Image 1: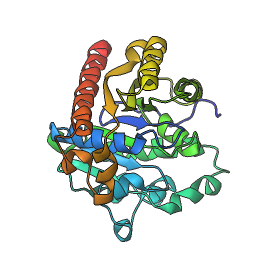
Image 2: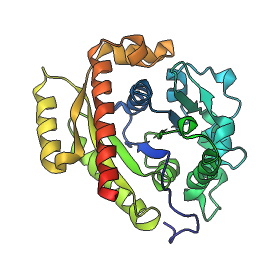
Image 3: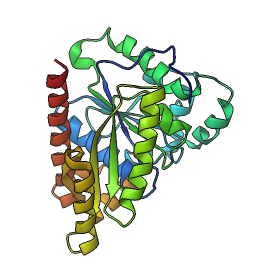
Length: 282
């Protein structure tokens, strides 16, 4: 990794939280979509930055491929600003910077750039400067970055540009093994690119109370990670799986289902941890 970069660190608002796990199928995009929706529902102004070339967060929020004219690819390539790529969604107060398969070629295209790991941080600094001219009630409170299922250059860009990392962790065998690899990457990014980066929390996903393994994983993760693990656990829930095919977050698709209610509680925990972080920094 590079030495300390010339681009200054991210400060202030919006708070940038990367949602990351190098393993696929752990509920990462589901978490980004539904956490963003729940935060918007309680009055926060939120954007999701889709940094996965599969574009699942964009699809899950009802953004058709033909409508993604300016995307995270253009933002990362330096061809457009975040404000140009941002689109409204079906959720009031929730916007998205969509993604397409074009993003898959970006790493090769920027491989010779000595500041390739700082592309997103640079874009966010430009966006924050534009935000400062807006009235307080028009500014974003949070940007959630939905990362690809890998510890790639895109994920490193997200961590380098973020205040914190939220880790969705499936309640399955080898969960801690995958988590340790991710934590090493966070440490490396903190050491070389973003000294202020923290683990915001670990969200246990796909919990099945009928499965002894799920309960054992929860016990093991809490023993190792302590209060970094959110109290709220996201259950296995068919409504969470169905909602993306309708282009809607589960919270809009079926607000009363167990999965939606869990994400509402997770949003409340995120807000409380943010309050504690502000108090600690005061």
